[in-house]
Length: 459
Image (tube, rainbow, N blue to C red; front, side, top):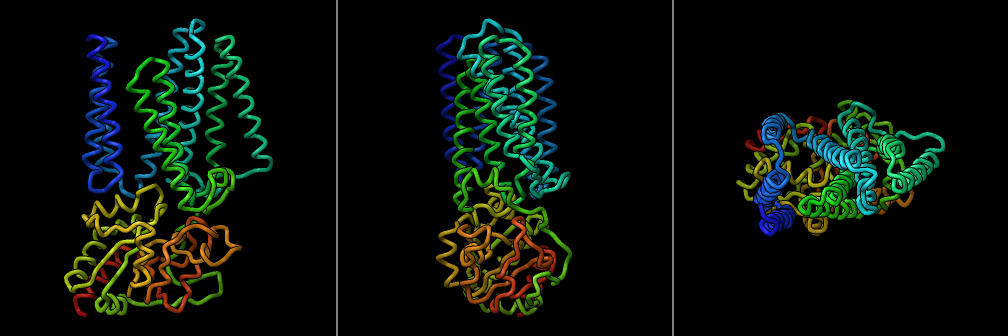
């Protein structure tokens, strides 16, 4: 393959990445964007294999095994486990970049140029941090380890000393291109990835996932510089940049700085609790029944649904859609208020509702939903907690004060479907549950929505 043809095909692949990424920004075009980006990646892989004249037998084995694993995951992974899967993808991406760059260092040191050595060091260090950090995030999300912040005395000092040691080892590696500081730095970076994620609580997991996704892209771009592959540089840079933008958006959605997310040790693991209306707050929440809620819904003109992680856990998106269909058949307009950090990963609720064929036009962002809520007859909060907590707006002493929320308490009637009065990922009690206009329907989300749909038939 000539250099000109290779460059042209890489350019086509890069254009496919950019177009695909652009189309991923909207729910209507996301699927086609994913396909376009996948085609671009296929082009880049085939061109690279031809250019490097690799042995196709081993590549074929890898493709078959990888495709089988991917197909199995696509069929078996539940929507509630999608954040864990994304975290694992980030981790493996970082590890792959680190291994490729490390292999290049083994093969060519000490003859590498200064620029290449810098790229190798950055790829290995960032890739190692991404690998272990992502799997700590996976363990927290999966419940293998506590989702609460894990802290200890002098934690920040230890982290600073580790970072300084990595800088020193990187300089040593760059000057002498010797194996010892290189591998020691990689090992310490693995430890840093663990220490970087353990103090982050469950409420901040969307930000962590977005940031680690960015890290995996940066590591890939650095590896592209190491092996002089323009497609990898462009693809990694796009992932890195989009991850940074998404991280920033998540921080803005919580009105918190990235430093506060990383070092604030904020959030709690307890988001379930036992079923029932018991609460440690001493306040009284008004319990209701499916029949009473069905009457309120049946005679409403405007209903806004606010989905949360409880909807995902119960896999209740299809039951929600069936209830909405019955309401719309009665002339009730149903919309969905989506908070940017609802669930455990960016866009979690959008994907969940799209799976149930909820119309894209019915999905409202934070500002649009808040404009509508003041004119809404009934708000149905399904498994959401922190994103509808009025303390973020009204209580200056609250840890989440200033975080933009969905102002569901501005609606005429609020119905909260929840298994108990337990705190959300932030570990905070929610005053919404005890307000005069709020009724609590204590049940699993799927059962509650199914009961509402049946009761509505008799209204």
